[in-house]
Amino acid sequence: MSEVDNDSIVMIVKKGEEEKKWHVKNPSVKIIIRKIPFNKIPEKLEAYILMGDTVMNYAAIQTSEETIEKWLGPHLQPITELPEVINQKMNLKLLELKVQIDALTEAKNNIVAQLPDTIKAQLGEQVGKLEECTNSISSFAKKITKSQRMGELGEEFIMTTLVDEFNEISFALVRQVAQSTDIKAKNPDMIDCLIEVKNYTNTVPTTQVDKFWRDLDTQNVKIGCFISLWTRLANIGEYKIVTKGDKLGIFMNVSHFSGSSGIDSGIKLAFFITRQFARYLKKLELERMEESILRQRIKDIQTEMDKMEEELEKISNVQRNLTSIQKLAKECSETIEDIFNKLTEKITKIMKGE
Image (tube, rainbow, N blue to C red; front, side, top):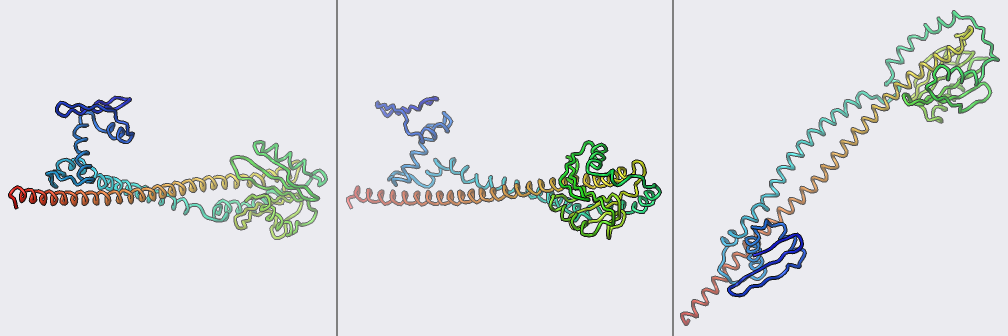
């Protein structure tokens, strides 16, 4: 019989008038015994003793494959069936994951299809609508007479105009030289944009337009507002929206917006258009972030599937090992049976005096 408590395991064996009681000390044996239901301990111990004696010592006892099957069969069967059960469950899980991945991939492809690579493709409809307004803006502006004096305009005037009208946006002066002021605008609901203001008395040369595109790269922004206070822009005209690669520029000669407060109105309009595009591009960036998250999710699922395939391979190895154990047990049984038969034959001959 056996006694099991939380602290120790005590085994008692009684054979005839002899009785032996001892404490189990081997930690591995304790772990095995604690896993066995209490009322099943004697049955399990008998099976383990028989298996150990059979495999390790080839004892010459009256046994057979049927005997081993009787004692070990109930314990080996669940083990041999386990890999097949696990394999079936894993296949079902992999099928479910494949369906999810296919759905995620389709969603990802739809997102990619809706996110063109160039600014012009992304904003084509909006650019087209605003370009249609060019003539209207020019016609309206020409009806207003000039009265603002050039000497009154400077960096302070421009910053005040922007801050008063767009007070939720952060404006920072990044560069100021003769005839030119560069301002950077930031706000959480839009991407950063650059405002370049030119104070030329003659047509703004193309070198300044080319420099504008370089400045966008230098300031690491994709959208800019190019404002000429007094004159038209070479190769641009009075007002135009231009795309170049992944950059977008809004060009405007605000001298048409004259009158008592005309130029500041032109500055406000130029930046208003720029801000609307910056907000739209911010939305596209967020959509791209969502796409990135989706790509990462698909990648994570694929990684998990790879790990599961590795685990399945381990299960297959266990299954092969169990098959080898069954084969070895059968061979042991046959060997024992053969030894027993030979010994029986020898004993019979001895008894007969042969």
